[in-house]
Length: 255
Image (tube, rainbow, N blue to C red; front, side, top):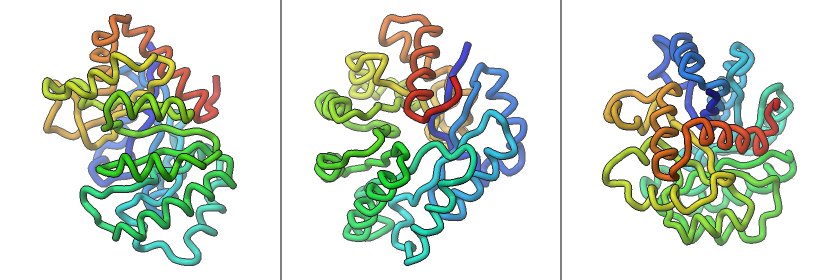
């Protein structure tokens, strides 16, 4: 069985004690590849470093909406340099977070626009963080003509999912789809064609049932895949195979 964890945060301190074991457990669970996500300049550098150490790990670069308040003149130049490194497969996670507002709204909107342009220039697909900002993000993406991307931890309804697909984006399904109270995400999962879906953990966050409340890790993506298979009336193998193929296409990973 093969799975790809399209969104994890292996650089985070939650993994400092047992990162090797986490990556080994993922491989044992059938997770062949993991994409570790850059959220700041330093985090992006660390992600690239990890990708250099582990064959199964790839990296992304970008500045998370929480951290865009710290962007200065040199930030984008540094990101351009990082984009040239081996195993960098996407730009993100970038977007808007109007739930926590850890950076001012104006700064978030400005930097999201700037980073969309940079991703286009670098010819990288984007990974979108969208929290309480559906309308604004869809509006900003309307005129964007880049290399596609994915809405990570999708939180919209089916109508929004359909609009995202029509714009050439994938929908990424996190472990929350296993929760009893996630009817909307389950409906999106049921209605969206399998060739539009990716799987992710967002580890160390959002552990699926039966690990809810504990630290998440890539091996647990199997629980998410099982729930997706159940919802869609498909085999686990079909879900693993198609979502992995989708990730390979989007991130230009080895076939």
